[in-house]
Every structure is written in structure tokens, then in C-alpha cells.
Length: 508
Image (cartoon, rainbow, N blue to C red; front, side, top):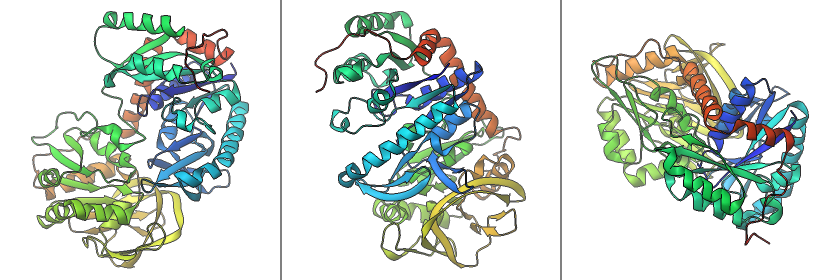
């Protein structure tokens, strides 16, 4: 086998990331040397990957998850262009792991040809190293206002002569109209590469769905390659926090007498909301993403997650009344934890001439530290100890603790302090720390005691890595059981299907 496949979608969050991971897992199980690829991702959920020179770089967290599905370590080539939105109008550009520019919608067009060439060269390199590369598109291929210069969806498929399948989320409604409209708005050359459709998140009787499948095949000349059922265990590593809904995961019943209620504040520029996923994997821990001060008041533990725009998100906290709710929660002696940008918000002062340019602004004053933003971004893997347990994570931040003598929450392996603790308020720059099982158990035990949830008992047998691996196996199982894998194999091995009909009106 030597080939590739583009997984496109009718919309954002249609299921491209999970379907790509599922196909990767299925191929990996069948002995295929397979790799994932997303030419350009727009997400603030990222991970640190060590490049060939040993320096840290960033890729989208979804591509790291897809790499795991392939049995591979994350590689900077799997996501050569990452756009990290810092506002509604600007994004940081990360190219092959390194932040190189900040762009707006206007000047992005000037940079796009360079980004496209890097993406094309990277995919060429990957195709030489692997039997198959499964490419994830972005948004919808029918965003006709963006088709010129596109190198992520059909522009990529056309450049490499790759077949494409289009996945649609039936849970949103209108999936057949979305399939037809997506195809009919593509130019004839792009339509020739779209080989079929996949329906995602179906609940109910397949027999009732089949007439729709038959009709969409009749009017487009392309088959529905399968129908993936809705599955509650597929919720890890979302590209966008909006994909989570409100309650994170599927919390199991508590091991003790009481639940532990965690409120995670959904910041406007939330970064790495995935830090809360490990907490949500624990039995008896209900993790709720919220923008409501009342939810903060009802919570046992509050998390301020990372942010791509610390100072402006802190201002938003104050404008919405959430800052007052957080301060009242802390004044009541209940536990509060900040991660990365959330940690910075808890400081006494924040001096930022880099990200926001606002200079010195007051933090929430709950941790006795000052934070100063450095021009260079810290990108590193981290390991050490915390609360007497081993802990590992990764760092992605400009902000540095520049003053204060707070008790550290963590220590690096070489003994250096990291983070801060002041009674029941905790902060760390390490993303992923709660994925370390023993550290997470000890933290939750302490937090439950501080919240007065003495009937909460942490589970001694939760293994977050096992839960992640199980989720990837579920994706592989769904592909193997519910998709026409013989047709997928043919597409990947043989390329586009000849003679597919054109569906008018098409695009110029």
C-alpha cells in the first residue's frame, strides 16, 4: 500500500479528527505503516513535540492523539501549520512547531503561499516515509470564499491526487442536505476526488436511515461508506473546547459517599482545556465547563485553565462577574487551581509587553507571585514530583514567575521549584500534570478535604493512559465494524475513483 486519503467534513466538529484517528487505528492494526496529517489547524489545544534538533515545538493536540492511534510518537510534520487565535481578528502562526508571526485575516493571504509550500513539502516527505498518510481537512471544503489558495482541503487533495471522503454529523440534523450542498459547491476538478460519505453520531434504527443513504447515492453517484453510531466514550482531545458541551466526559459513580464537583471556567481564548480531561476520567468527579458565576458558587473545586490571551481573558473574568465568584470561592476556603494562563491570572501582578502590550496589570492576588511575559516562548517537556508523587507534563508559555517566594506546587527532576501553593490555592505552568495518576489522586484527595467533601474517595485504579488507549481502540473498532473498509482500502491504495458524475452547479 502506498497512498493517502483526505477526511473532509461538512462543518467544523463533524467528526473529522475522530474518523481520521479511527482509520489510522484500523490501518495500524492491519500492519500498515500509517501517519496522520493536518496541513493547517486552528486550535489553542496543542502539545509540545521535540524536533530533530531536540528543541520543543507545537502541534495540535488532535494530531498527537492521531499519532498515538498509529502507534507513533508525535512529529512536527503531522501538523506543519498551527494557527493559535489570540483574538477574533488575529492568530499566532506556528510553522513546523515554531511561532513565526502573528496574522490577521487581511495579511494572512500574504503569508499563505509560504505556508502552503511548507505543508506540501512536509506531506511529500511523510508519503516517502509511510505506506499511507491519512489527512484531516479543516472546517468544510465548501467554504467557497476561502477556496482560492486553499491547501488544507480540496487544494491539498488536488495537489496530491488524493481521494476524499466527507463526514457529516447527523446529530446536528440536515446531514443529507449538507452532503449534497458540499459536493454541489465544489468545482468539477474537486468533485472528481470526492469518493463518498460517512455519517457520524447516528442513534436509532439503520433501517429508517437507509432510504436517505440510497437517495444521496442516487443524486450524487457516490456511496455512503458507513454510518458511525453515537458513542459516549469518544470525548478526549477535542480541538475546540466548544466541542465538549457542558459536562466533560461520562463520570462514573463515586467510590465513596459523595461526588466532587469541578467547575472549569470556559475562557474566551481557552487553551488546552484538555487539562481537565484527566479529572473527568475519575469516578465520582463531575467536571463542568461554565461561564456562569452561579456554577462557580456551587463548585467544590474551581479550575482556571490556560489562555492564549491571559490579560484580556482576565479582564473578561472581571467584566462578567466571574472574577468576583472566583474570589468568593477562595474566600470560603474552597480549593482553586490555575494552569498556565490560569496560574498567571492568580498572581498579584502581570507585566505583559509581549502578548497584549498592556504593561503591568493587577492579577487576582490569590498567589504571592508576580508574572512577567518574556519575548521567547517556553516549549518543553517537564518531569519531577508534586505532593510526594511523580508527575510529568509539558510547558507552553511566555509568562514567567518573576517575583515572590511562594511555596512551590511541583519540583523539576533537578530540584528546581515550579508553580505555587498558598493554602487552598494552587498554580502551575505544566499542562498535562493531572494525567500523572498518583499526583492526580493526591491532589483530588487534598482538594476534596478542603472543600468539605469528606465522603469523597478517590479511585485507586484509574489509569488515564489506559483510558486514552481504550478510546483509540473504540475508534478503530467503530471503523472496522461500521464502515466499508474494503472501499476505504481501495481508495487509499488505488486513489480516486474514475468516472464520478458532476453535480451542478459546481464552482467556477
